[in-house]
Image (tube, rainbow, N blue to C red; front, side, top):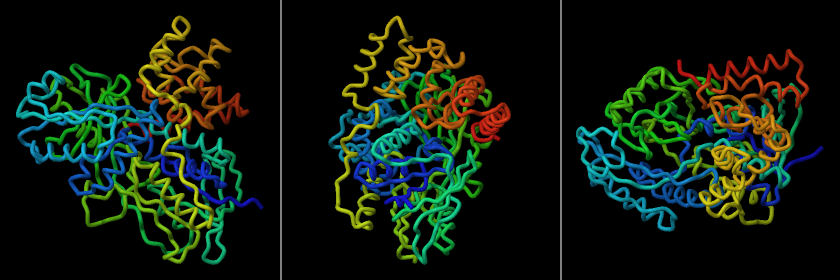
Length: 532
């Protein structure tokens, strides 16, 4: 009977980061995820790597400092996925937070990021804002500030690359594998019974220590112990929409208080589109069926139409919408926006359940530091010799690039005449230096150099690469989390046939199994990526 040092439940950014850190420090690790890596809250975020400017309002200086330090580390270790992004915060006469308040916050923000590689903030006059963003609402505009944070256009790939690095260092990673129950020995968790949700096969995984990193599903996993454990999660729902560029759309990210209720929202240029979000409301519905509502979508549209009067957006302009639940701690007395964004590492020894740790809270930006702290504790509990983390300086797969802009320019020139320069840039933004592995597939079979469909620049070679090298087992794995094709104008519906055929060939599906896979994916699109 094989016994792992660690069983990690949950393949979001935190679970994947913990698996990588553990594997790099020599632990024997098994990671299981009931859907796909990065398929939960990780893939339904605002896609920003940021210090959390508004956390200063609640005097959470340690969290802001931690976030800003990890932001800088990710810029260096994953430059293909994490990029600087310039923001504008406009001041309007109706805003609750005035110029003095925001400027004071920006000064603290700069002080807490003293070692950053990006520019410091600058105050803006009304005229300067008009020059930078001529389409922005001028009525009652007083001025503003500009500053830098970062974007991670595909956080699901950030999670995946952590898994790939973990596996390359001996970890076992299983997606589409659900934990059915814990294996208990008295008060000790010694493993779990799991079920492969694709094959239906059941098996047992034994481990000296189990880490519950299931995000918003943490309480559901805790219930598997059969013990009455304290409720830990109290997440809030966030909805986002994606639209095509509109007349005088913003060229910078804009962070603004809404006119309706003063809630902060973002709009920022995202891969030749505009990403808009987010809402922040308590959520008590199904965690497996989180959907945007018409009211939430209309709320975002109305605010953007006021902020950019020439946008004239309607529901018809929304090409993609999604919602997720933030894995925040359960504090019933607080409003959604006040819930703490910091993470907690909970050792359940005090509740009478041994060998079980839960991760509560956390954000994408700080996943690396959370992982470090978790494995520091794991080494102590396992009585292993301490070994420092390598993740502060070790590049993620494909991330060994000193200057991303220079690298893109040089690679576009290198392949000029053979491949579309825009494709080269797109692939580098997804795979970093590993993009060349995708091109080799396309060079070997020129049919795989063709676009998957007319609505995007992705090529068929990426489908094969996802199956052969990135643990993609379903249509959704390929089109939503490996390639991002789902956010194209056709919502990936035009690409389903080729992808299903490729998967059927790879895994030996018959026509009935292929039809079932297609039906399941279409239902997922209708259920999760459109509003009701």
